[in-house]
Each structure stands twice: as C-alpha cells, then as structure tokens.
Length: 544
Image 1 (cartoon, rainbow, N blue to C red):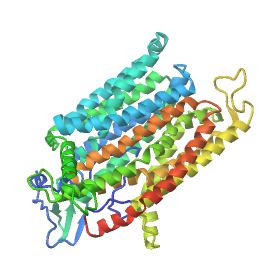
Image 2: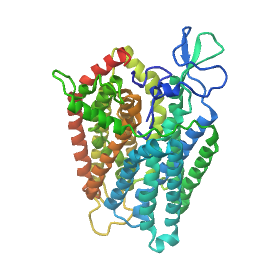
Image 3: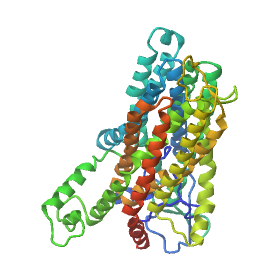
Image 4: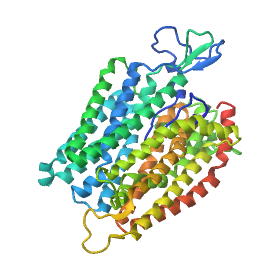
C-alpha cells in the first residue's frame, strides 16, 4: 500500500505528534465496508471506468462534530497541563525536580493508557462508547483539579493530593482512552468508495475525503493547543489557578455535549475483538512451521490453510515488526521533546521577561510554527526537494528530524550556560536566592528552541505516524499507532529519571547529556535503517 507523505500533492495528508492519532483510508476497503449508508447517488468501491480525476468530498456535519470535540479536548489538555510546572512550584511549594517528575508522570499516564483505550474499544465497547466513558472520566478529573486548586483546598492541605488524584487517576486515563479512538472514529464517518459529481469523469474519492478529515483533525489539535496555551496561563497569572483550570473543564463539557448530540447520526462499528490474538497465533504458527531458505521468520505462516489470516496479513505483520524496530529509537526523542512542558519553562523563569508574560505561554510558539510550517512544507518545501531530485524517504526524514532536534538542544545547552554566566544570581546556588530570581538575559532567546522542536516534529513525529500507517495491514493500523504513541511513555520515564537533576545548575548537564546521546543515536539510526527507504520505495512502486 502507498504511504501518506507530506508534500505529495495538495490533497495529501499531514499529521502532527502533538498529537494526531488514527487510521488511514485503507482501513475502509474491506468487504464489511462495501455496504454503507449513502445519500444521493450510489457510491462504488472500485475506481469507475470513466474516472479522470478524483477530488476530496465535503465532510458531513457529524464528522465535524467529532473534530470540534477533539479541538475542545486538546484545548483542555494543553491549557491545563501547560500550567502544571509553575502551579506545582509557586502554589504547591514543590521544588523544580519534583515539579518536573510529577509532570513526566502525567505524560507517561497520558500515553500508557492509549493501549488500554484501544483494547476496551476493540474488545468490548466500540469506539463511540469508549470515547464517551473516557471523556466523562476526563471531565471529572478537570472538575477535581479545579476544586483542588481553590484557595480553601490548598490551605486545607488537599492541593497536592487533589492534583495527583485528578491528573493521574482521571485525566491521564481519560486522555489516553480518547487518543486511541477519536481520530479513527472520525474517519469511520466517511463512507468508502467513489461518488460521482456533476462533472463527468470527476469523482469524490473517500481516500481523499478521509485525508481532508485528518487535516481538519490536525488543525483542531493545534488551534485548541494554541488557544489553551494563550488563555489559561494569563488567567492564572491575573486571576487564579482555580479559575484557569475551570476554563478547560467548561470547554471540554461543551465538546462532550456537541459530540453526544451527533450520536444518532454516527456510524458505530461493533467491537470485533482484538487483533492481538490473531497476531499471536500467526507468530506461533510461523515458529512451528519453519522452512529452509525463508527470508523472514514469519514466512512460515505464508500459505497457511484454514487459518484466520492470509498472506497479505503476514506480509503486513512483517512490515509492522520492522516499524517497531524503528520506533525503539523514539523514546529519547520524546525525552528531549518533553522538556518544553517543564525544563524549558523552568529555564524561562530564570530569565528577564516582561511583566505581562507568563513564561509557560512561550509554548504557543511551537503550536504557531506548526500551524504555519506544515502547509509550507507540504505545498512548497517537499515538492521543491523532489523536483531537485532529493527524494526523502521516511528514514531520511526521521533522521533529519532527530538532527534538527539535536541542533536545537545544542542551542538550549549553550543558552543555559549563558544564563549561568549572567548576574545577578549566576547559577542560583548562593545564599538568600529569592523565589522569583532571574538573571539579566532576555527570555525571547527561547524562541529558537521552541521553533526548532516544532520543525523537528514535521520530520520525525509526522513521519513516525505515516510510517505506522503505511507499513501495517488494515487490522493492525490502530495497534501500530498505539505502539508508536506508547514510545512517548519511554520518553516520559527517561525524563522522570533525569528529573532528579532538574534543578540548577545540574540541568545544564542534563541538557548536554541528552543532546550528545541523541546525536549519536541519530547516526546509528540512519545507518541501521537507511535501506528501509529503498524497500518502501519499491513497495510504493508496486502499490503494496
């Protein structure tokens, strides 16, 4: 099957690690999807004989309801979580290392539970019910977070316990359960096949419509993140944290209401059982039926009779396992990436800044760069590279993203050293250092690393999702996506360990060590997997 790549055409699909999750149009090509509700002219599954040009169709209002719900959820998540670092230090009295550690536990929970959400939906409840149940759980956490941050709760000693219960027991599980299902559910609202238009030879192609749906989905994530990061820290700075946390709760309640309102219009696929059992049986069969001269250990499952898989599934499983090898390099990437939500903020707190600025708001630079840069790369940069003869396969793009992040963190490390060379507090280790101490160096110097992280996402995070989609068979796409997202848990665990050295001046050595290790791993990664680009090019050439 062909992979979805940035910059292929104006109708190609772009995704971001901030978070886009879901499925591809190939998921809707099986026999069970050939019968579906349509309005107007009858859709056809196979390309029509008179097909001259395919276009994306319009998204239905109920499909957009799912997109709006995701916008509200991402506003709630980024609006609330962005404030955790300063809230834990300024209001709950935690040290920098403690605040970093608690923030990394939140990140771990948010991604570890994606697999749980996928299993619950596939095995028991289906996507719609799973999304609603986990959304309610999430909303309870936001309400509890609002209550626990009120003055009477903090003064009464419930601030930190309430925070931990709200974030780890409710919000973490809630967002993970939603992540693994909501984008795939959005795509399921789009009937598969070709629909004729008023122009002869021109048909609406469901694959392009699904791609359009994901583009809206992507924009909803970044718009939600941008608004939440702009508004909530300012409310906390000029009002109270309780009021600031109330905003995500109210917005997400509205999002859930909109989502539920469209319930009767949604296509709701019944749970079919987890594909993991099928994968296990296929692997076990291959082990028991080894053949001489086989190129891959799973070749023993090819040509199996009276088994729940076919050869296409086996080949797709082989590709999926190759993708998992690639994903093993991602945890350290995420460990560096996650610094934006804590160590970057702590760094900004030690720098000179305007009185109206809350330093955690600088995260909006990352969202803004993504919103602007993704279309530019999609429509201009990648097409230009192809015209110049530079074909960037997924491994080349992932390596480029790693390299950009390394360069960004070289800058961060040098900047941290510069902060410690400036007065009046230098490395903040002397006696009587005030709580709001900062050195004479501008916080606007942080714009560069926030932007560098965003550009690295376009190459590494986006491509990681595309790689998962293109290499997995239809039944395994959501599973492989969940495994890709799960690599963020590894990054959170690395960050949790390194949080011990998250204070001044040890954080300088953390930045330097992370930068050096990822730099070495980027080189190892390229030489280990560069041949995959040729394999994938051949795969796309033959349409497999």
